[in-house]
Image 1 (tube, rainbow, N blue to C red):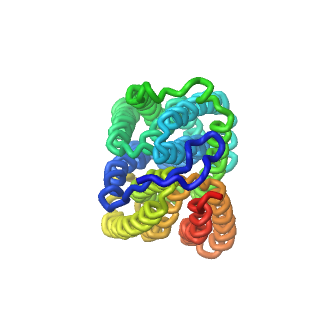
Image 2 (cartoon, helix red, strand yellow):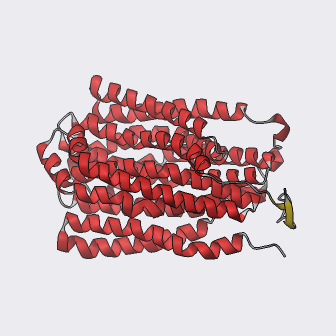
Length: 456
């Protein structure tokens, strides 16, 4: 049954209600494969830290930690290509608008290649600004510069992979997303170990392995997606370059970029404060943050299901599906967060021992392990709400609440670190993660009412 509820906005298809059901099975059909896919991504950081850690060089490990932060600020600020493409694709799919589904992908691909090439050209400036922001010691800075220089050549490939994954997730094709992520990350891990440890190329070899993995994934992923397009829905060049479509994508992407940059700014400030406590604490915090990322990518599986199902419900203009998707996403994220925290508490010492042979770094990381174990619970709601807001393309509200949360983190970090040292720094991080989720949840009723209000 369909129900026309009002005139179409602009050149969109008629605004029609297209009912569909959201079930536990539907949530896990997307969550399960993407959880497996996402969890391999932080394993890249774990592998890199493990490779460098086996060399027994705290300076190189610190350089890797700082380099990863700089790289994330430079690259992951453009993760909007994944998120924005997912939301816009899911809404077009819910609207049953095949031409717009394809047009969104081509627009994202054009942006990815343009930005990626620009980032390679800007690498010296990016590295210099990153080192200025984190302010590591001279030896750590040299290792950091080597890592960022080599890895930056993966920029166009990494951003194309964002666009490909965003399209795949927007279509709800979790199995394909899993296959592509396993390909990218499998090649990355294998070659990082080979180049960094077996061939003895150290931190440069680890970065080169990442470049190779991203390149293979981009070429294969783009080919698979394009071959699956229905020729009957092929958009014209005019449709792809449609000004309104590009402006909408750029507007959503701009807000998500600001949100992502703010998130990475918090992590950068966290790393800078950690660097002030010395190379050992810096390396220990880096290892613990990798554990947090592992937990976060488990939660991202549920958030991805929320993105697709919420986006589809907004495109289909079907409120029952929206409400059900939000409810189930919160439920399963809570269960996963509790399980992940328990695993970190029980097995954290063993995980730390796998990542470094340096006794000082091990002891320091174990001392702060309970804080890392708390992060999944503190950040659970933020992951879910990010998925909801990305799927609905409510990017402006997500951006604003991130800025509020970042301001709280900055105040807390400056207030608590002088009093409690690294413990105060971790407490500020927990407050930041919690505030993100709570603020978005409080904003949800107003956005829900506006999105599903009858036309007229």
